[in-house]
Image 1 (cartoon, helix red, strand yellow):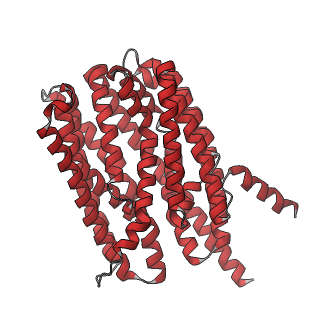
Image 2 (tube, rainbow, N blue to C red):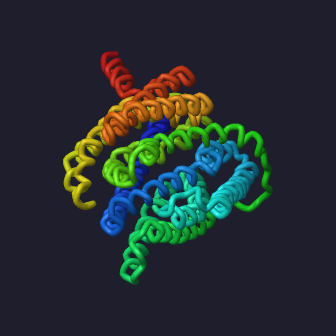
Image 3 (cartoon, rainbow, N blue to C red):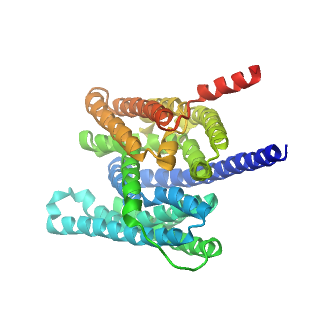
Length: 449
């Protein structure tokens, strides 16, 4: 009886803690999105279709690469640090933290120098509007990569507010302020001005986050020796990096393909629709930020019952919240797109298709989190790459025929296929059913017994 009561209390703390953390992350991401939306509206109105399209294309590439250049060590922190701490292996935890910082900075710096060198040696490779913004975007890569790693470290300790607030809220706030100040001071309303403001914002937010994370870590990881197993860490994290690259590319592949197949003005309209739609995937992001590391900790403890309950709760709550958010976005979409300026209302059908894809994919539950946190990251990487390939093929087929709507349809179809495949893989590898209807069947069976 006592054991049962203790287990029930522990599960209640886990459940309420995860829910509260998810709500906190979602609130921060929504606030950041509002600021980011304001920045995008200002940028679009100042730069016009073409200039905004140039900035959007470069920002997509920069955000995608910056997230990937951690080599998966950001997500790996959520897997290795809680496990090492649960086992009392603080030497390896301290080693992971240092190795992650050094590898992230080294790889991202090499990537930035490669981009700058390419632009300097072959200046004619880029069309004229892309030259100066490209150089600034290259300088931004190490800052984004380091901040992504810091986010992963903070998430591993369940410091979700510290993980999310600097990169997604503070960075957007500084970006908006810097852009407004630059334009008022007489800076030209071009893509390079917006990219310079983003670089300044990233530097400020990353520096603050680094100081706060380091101070908190000193409380939970006292100074001591470091032990390294870099080969083992990279063997597990590189597939996660591949998942991250494919997942991030998944969110941007439609914009990238449009940049290749259609003029910058069309990219600007489509990107504006994605900035409105971005509120919907935030639900999944918030749930993952709050629960992925809890999956890892529960797995390390061997608490199978708590893990299954957490998966069921996450799946059902995420699907319900995604549907509610999607409906709200569709209702407000025409007004939000109109704020970008005349002609951006053409993105309303695109918005509807993108929201439908996100809502449908949410029904299949946290298959990706289970595979990356508990083992199965290589299978997750393979399935994500396959889905990315499907998105590219569908995009190449549909964009020439349907234009912007074809890009949205290709991405949505591939998103749903990926969610289905990951759910089946999680069931095969870990024996855990992630779709929401699995949880409902379990609840009905429990009630009947």
